Every structure is written in structure tokens, then in C-alpha cells.
Length: 165
Image (cartoon, rainbow, N blue to C red; front, side, top):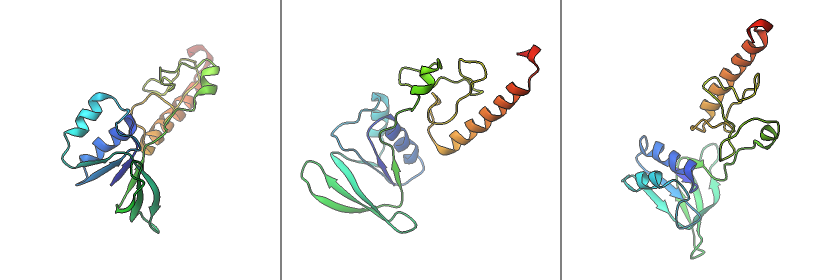
């Protein structure tokens, strides 16, 4: 399995995969992670994680499933092919919350919309779900669950009699 990236998301994904895969390879275009130090330390302690510094993926190869990637070493310019069965792209994640913030919805210091466990924001009747929220796990399954919760809560909010609001 190959993880592309060098920030918190890439490191969290790497740590998760290292617990279920026999080998995890990380490519990062720079020579050091941008992630929190505790994540970097945890990755360094994993025997089944290999880090390819100064390396970028040029191409992902395969028909219906991933078979290999073409890598370029940014320091030497050398390219090579590496056989992998999965690629997890964890780069450039930034919440698209500018409109929500402009509408008065609270965000955290990284721009993620603050929600509680019912997906409620600071504005009554406004709910948020998915990667734009401050929930720590950024996965499709988590976003779907948050979406279901937000939809049910929104329905309940609308159907609630005026005297219970």
C-alpha cells in the first residue's frame, strides 16, 4: 500500500494502515513531514513503514485496480516503477468553509466547521457533515454517517413544534 503526502492526514492514514497491512510505503515530495511531532514519532517506530523522501508519484498504473506507480526522485530526477496494490492520496486537504464562516458559522483554527455529536453548528437549524467538519476522521464512511445524523437532526428540527424550539 502506498500513501502519498506529508501532513497530518497522510500520517494518520499511514498509522492506521500499518496496523492492518504487512507493508506501507509513504511518498513525500519534501525531506520532512509537516505533521504533528507525535504522529511522526509513531510512524518512526513502525517496522512495516518505509518512507520515500523527496519522491512524487508521476503515474498510477492499472486497469480495474492499481498495479504500480511511477515515482520520480526530486533530488536526482531518477524515475522508477514500484508495484503496489493500493494508493491513498492524502495531500492538499483544506476545508472549503469560507461561505459557512461568512454566514456566521464557527470554525476552528484550521477552518473546519465546529459541530457537536449531532452535527449541529453554533447556528440553530444549521448542520454540517463530512470532511469540512472538525470531526477527526476524514473517510467516506464517516462522512456518510455524519450525513445521516445531520439529515435526521435537521428533519427533527423542522418537525419540532414551535413551542419546543
